Length: 120
Image 1: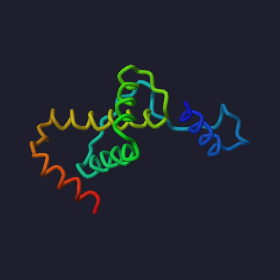
Image 2: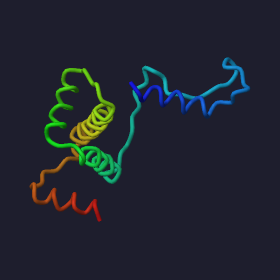
Image 3: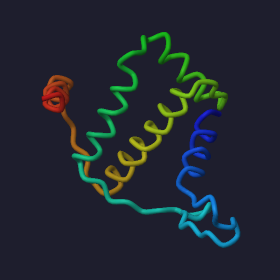
Image 4: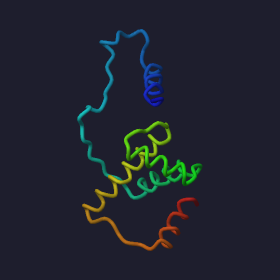
């Protein structure tokens, strides 16, 4: 996919071209690492807002097709890859909040009001 190529290009721009590859060190997260994070509600709302922004230019047909690509694990479009990433992030935050008894019920009307406040 295109993201990996872009990442490699960005990495190459940041590395010292004169340093030998075996001597120049970088700090990276381990491949098998499981990182615990604490999220504020404000940051979670920003992630949701980013998700809505990503979908704003898509019609329901595009979103249904993207959901199918995700379900079938056959992602063919860059934006669907990013959409899935945000879905995973938001669902994990929600699962952790549920486990920690930090969820509350609201009406659709109240939710729309809260989401409207984000645009201000």
